[in-house]
Length: 212
Image (cartoon, rainbow, N blue to C red; front, side):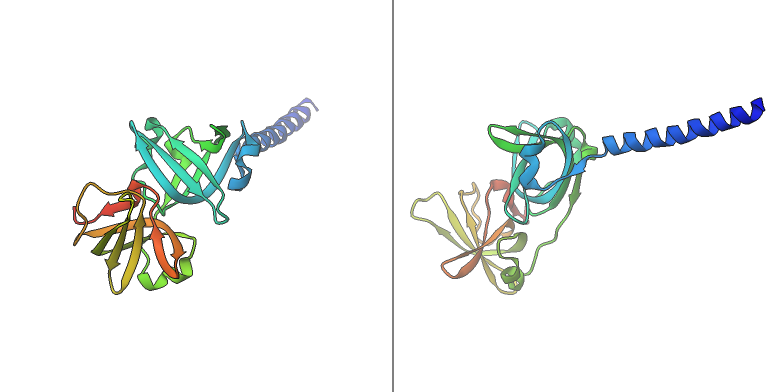
């Protein structure tokens, strides 16, 4: 009788243990949320997914503007300890991030604590004839710079790339190198300006010289 009681208690303990593990796992697993609701999840660990729309580097840290399909965005700071384990980053890539939700200077952000909390999904350059189907999306294109036009303010450039066709690229900055004749990769948002499609690069990290 005593032996049966011990067996029953052991079985009960096993069941309770499994339940506790399941509840613990559910508590630890981050909640997947839309970028638009991150500020409402302040203090909680969440998981978000989006496209790298802008990328800045400073003092070994990287700051990502993660953009959703509807245009909502959050900032993802990758501090040096995390940044060193993430690998190469490029505008236009997809990113899945787990981290603590909050706001900084009134901007929503998700802060990962480890490189394991960041997953990068590489994207490939699209053909120029595919840009019409990518309006308002973030893409990468590659080509040789055939024309460089500097705006009247002298603070912006418009590039004409050639690669089985032509495409325009808008830069809100003037690079330190002469681009004419170089093969480049431009990463930015496809926009329509005066009836023409162009790839609008938002940051210096969005332009990469491929000849170097």
